[in-house]
Length: 433
Image (cartoon, rainbow, N blue to C red; front, side, top):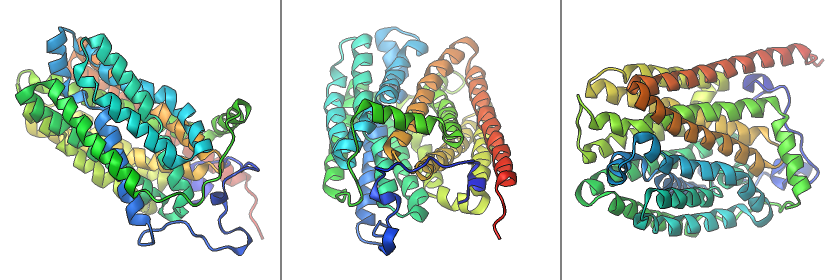
């Protein structure tokens, strides 16, 4: 896809120490990276799918349980929401350092270690004696999980051919959606019978199985070149990425989409337990089956970009999420469910498009480029969960919807700026003979 298609004026320049995957065909060598139907692609896809399942199941394991946590500790939604915000905030803070470790020690090694620590902490979460202890454990869990998202995207950028990259990342994001859905559905029904502590324990056990299968399935990297851990080199790479206008726009888009999603799904359990819905915890957990829509929208994001372009896909994703927010204002279960379907579809499509654009734009330091995106993305989640819960406490569901609509308007505004930047770049680019 051309710079005009993406809204880019320039692409981050390749550094002398760039990975061999940056130009695998140099010197006439055949491109040995994976492609759909080729050797190792199916194992790789399944492994990263399972890593996505474990990551999102652990990261949001308390989200559907917030009303029960509020009741046990006697706190409001805004306080209980810190069990979600602490995990996503920990991930946001540590994703860049963990990406640096992956540049030195390898993507597969860092992802394996991250999942191992995260599942170990997850098995301790059910025994938290207080809300403060629970928040601390959740922050540690998020910090441990930080090694998975950025390393996974960097692994894909190095090991998968560019034309298949959006689809491959879409499958990883689809794993996120399945993890988020299964974790919430399981916790809802388990918690209804045995309480929230048993529910998060079950999530931890499932994550252990996913982590073991991931390590057994993921092919060894063939195009990874170790980088430097020197702070000056890392700072220079980060500075290069942050100086790129397209990457900055993509980071902001990821944060804003996640603000919508984090706010809605943190608060929806509280809304559905209140009148006029008054639904039991198990039924509320089953509401998260709408994540299956995100699985479809994320895995088909590549085809959507092929049809309407990257900016067109972002406009469509934003419009879909906005329509869902407005529909969810109605006080009836059916329109609320339809609204959640649209919000989920728009979010996962937008996330897959933006995150894959980051991987394709960065020609060096891909782990750092992805880490910056993930940091912005999970900061958006933390902001969405806390601000959305605060708005709900002050103004009800309409307050949470208002926060979401402002975030969607931000996505549209940034995409418009990208379109203008692309037109300026086209006018400045001389036409070749």
